[in-house]
Image 1 (cartoon, rainbow, N blue to C red):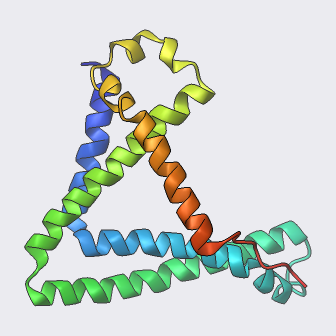
Image 2: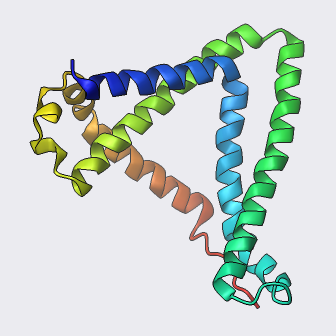
Length: 173
C-alpha cells in the first residue's frame, strides 16, 4: 500500500467518524441545508443585489456580497434548525441508531468524494501515468465502479433538471 491508499483510507475513516459523531439526522440535514443555501443564494441573489445599490458601488462586489449574505444566512438558520432537531433525536433515545446510520452516511459521502477525485483528477493532471497511481491497491477497486457512478450521476442530474427545471438566478432590476 502506498500513500494514495492511505489517503483513501483516511478519507473514509474521517468521514465515517464525523458521521458517527454527528448522527444521520444531522448529517442528512447538513446536506439539505448546504444545497438549500446554494439554491437560495442563486435564486434570490439578484434581488438582494438591487437593495445594495446605494451601499456598494461595484456591481460584481455587490452581487458577490448578496450571494454571500444569503448563503451564510441560510446556513445559520439551517444550523439552528439542525440543532433543535438533533436535540429532539437525543431526547427520543434514538441516538444509537442515529449514530450508526450517520456512520453509514459518512461512508457513502467518502465513496462519493473518492470517486469524484479519481474520476476528475486524471482530466486535470496525468496522474494515471505515475507509478504511485499504478501501484496503488485501492484505486483499481474504485475505478471498477466508475461506469456505474457516471451513469448514476447522469440519472440524478436529469432527475434534478426535471424537478427544478432550469434554475435561473433572479435578475437584478
